[in-house]
Image (tube, rainbow, N blue to C red; front, side):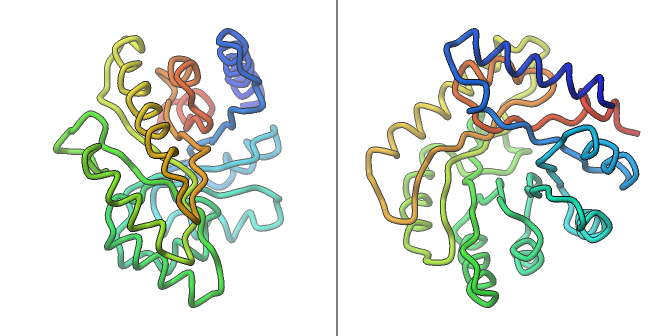
Length: 227
């Protein structure tokens, strides 16, 4: 685990330096869905500081069992509105807000516990019918509507682009999300600081970093192939 983690960190550092970025501007999220608590603990003890989870029930158990560790938990999976009340209690950053309905429910539940919840809007940049996320052309309105919700703080965008074996084929999708972020950033809305781009996974994170990723979501390269 420690060796794999060091290898990933080295690759992040090299990718950042190669395009003139500070490696510290890229944060690693170790995606621990389906990984047992014992292995997640091992990753934390090897130096992981941010964990990404996809399922509320599974995450709840791990977060409780590992509550003594000073780590940050991010929700990176598809979130249903009826799970919003759990999500705001468990997670520091929710990456997958894809509708105003979900945003309003998160805002409502955050208000109940006196929290301002950090979120990202998930953009379906490849317009794939099987994937969640707002379409790029709908993102501006969602972005503006979310900015009016007092208990949400919009920090940027997340995407899961189409899968290709060649990272160079994914690069245009990462670039498109960055360009979308840059355009919307010019509106200077309240409750909004669009600094974060959550994009890039085990097979393509170097290309994502070169296109501006600040959060890379890596599971297999750290934990090995999922069972």
